[in-house]
Amino acid sequence: MSQEPRLYTGTGPAGEGLGHTTIDLKSSGWDSNTHPLITSEGDSNGDGKPDLYATSHDTNKGIYFYPSITTTGIGSPTVAGTTGWLNFQALS
Image (cartoon, rainbow, N blue to C red):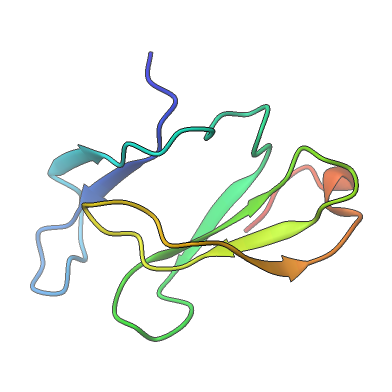
């Protein structure tokens, strides 16, 4: 079973709606060991592309913001929060 993130494109004009096409984003290191919690609230930075937030498995790290999820991959992360995120059980 693949542990790569997948993009489910929607059927609406802006990509909204139920996903009908699945695209493996071919990004390594995306499993429950390296990123215990992952969430998305859609387009957080206003660039018209969905974004992700993911925690780190490292106790000295925090939560990262990954911009611009596209069919070709995931944007470079930036730190969105510092230590203490391993105590969380869920993100929403």
